[in-house]
Length: 92
Image 1 (cartoon, rainbow, N blue to C red):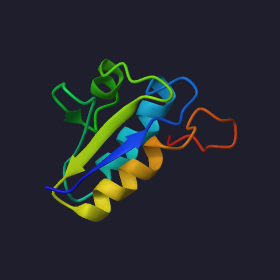
Image 2 (cartoon, rainbow, N blue to C red):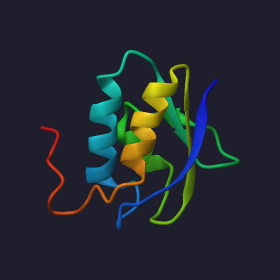
Image 3 (cartoon, rainbow, N blue to C red):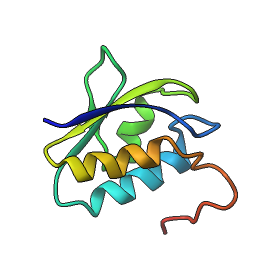
């Protein structure tokens, strides 16, 4: 199973807006992608609520994993961005 460790880039961590953007992107993928804090059980990246339960703050390392390497890379690329910045489009 492909996985990648990345550092949370959003200033607010994986809170409401960043979690919504990540989950929206994960829902559009053809495979399941998981996000987890090392040492804890990973959660489904397509659920904003589950992502927020991780409590991952800015600068924390999280593990993104799944069956499809391209999908893992796509979600990992979102996690490292500051998704709470003004210029990030709202997924709605």
